[in-house]
Amino acid sequence: MKAIILTIVIILLIIAGLVWIYSVSQKNETNNAARTNGILTAQERVFDFGTISMAAGKVSHIFKIKNTGTEFLTITKIYTSCMCTEATFVKSNIKRGPFGMLGHGYTPKNIAALNSNEEAEILVRFDPVAHGPAGLGKTERIVYLENTGKNNLELVITVNVAP
Image (cartoon, rainbow, N blue to C red; front, side, top):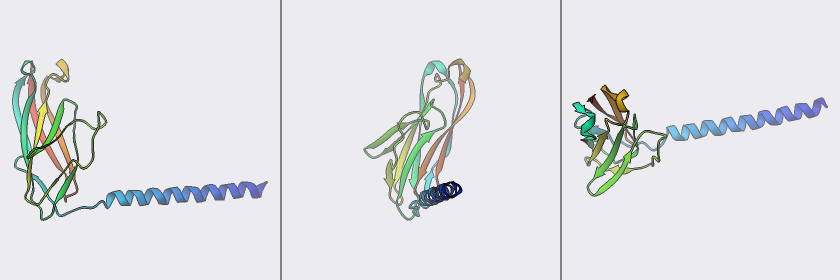
């Protein structure tokens, strides 16, 4: 009986070890995803809408982005910090989005590629009515752009919501 229990314990340890090795290799593979010498930059990283009225409805702003690196990069994911904010990728006649908060809708991977020195736009829309009366006052929202270049980029909007 002791031999059977010992055999089962050894088999379970071997299985646990194999699972651990597999999970570590997957994590390393994800961390070592193909990075390029692309560098994603923005002409402005923060935009202040100032004071806006809930009654006026949605407001929008266009952020200009550019790959200032020496190689192409791929924008792998765009998402926002809150569902009251959405972001759309625009390059020439290509439009992807709108994208919202992670976990609230489909977030595709590999949205678009930017060659070295190529530009695009991120159209950001903010809905002051999204939070109702609880959303009055000063707030800050972030648009996240993950990419295969040397850096991820955050674009920030601030707004003071009035009734």
